[in-house]
Image 1 (cartoon, helix red, strand yellow):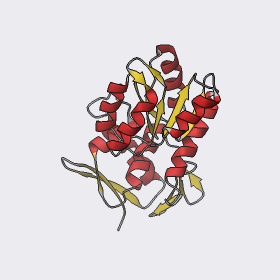
Image 2 (spheres, rainbow, N blue to C red):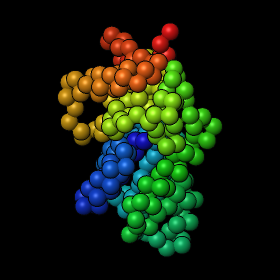
Image 3 (cartoon, helix red, strand yellow):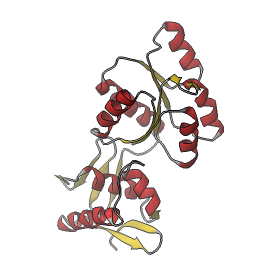
Image 4 (cartoon, rainbow, N blue to C red):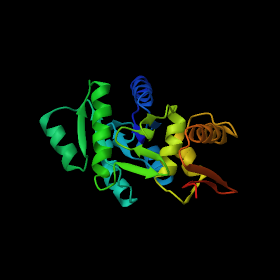
Length: 224
C-alpha cells in the first residue's frame, strides 16, 4: 500500500511515517495543500491521510480538488479537531474516515487497511500462477504448503507483477510500488531485488518466470 501523508508538524510526521513504514506501507509525506495537490497529479496512492489545520488552508478543501483530478483514493482525516461538529463536517466534506489526535498507530494502520480492502472488494483475494499462490489479504506467497520468506521489497515487487500476469510492468511502476520518494535508490537496486526474487522462485520450482523487457520493465508469467 502507498499513501500520501499530509502533515505539517515535523515530529508527528516523523512518528507516523516510521510507524507506517514498519507495516510495509510506502509513505510520501508533504506539509502543505499545494504540495499535496502536486503529488496527487504525479503519483498513484491507495489512501490519503490528511490533517485539517495546514499552513495554507483547511485540509478538507483538498478533497474536491483530488476528485477533480480523478484521484479516487480514500481520504482519512487525522486531526486534533475532534468535536462532534468537526467530525460531521469532515465526513460531509468527503472524508472516508475520521480519526482524532491523540491516537494509537495500530488503529490508524487497521483503518487504512480496511479502507484499502473496501476499495477492492470485487478483486480476488488469491491469485494462482504456475505453482505459486499469492494471498493478497494476508500478503503471503505460497508454493504448495510452503510459505516463501520474502523481505518487504521483494514481496512488493512480486505483488505488483502478479497483479498484471503476462503483461509488462514498467520500471517506474515497480519503483513507485517499492520505494517512497525520499528513499535513496541505487541505479541497480530494483534489478537486485528481482534477481533475488527470481532465485527464490526457482529454488522452490514455483513454475513462473520474471522476464526483463528491454527499455520497458519486467513481466511475470507461468513457465510454458
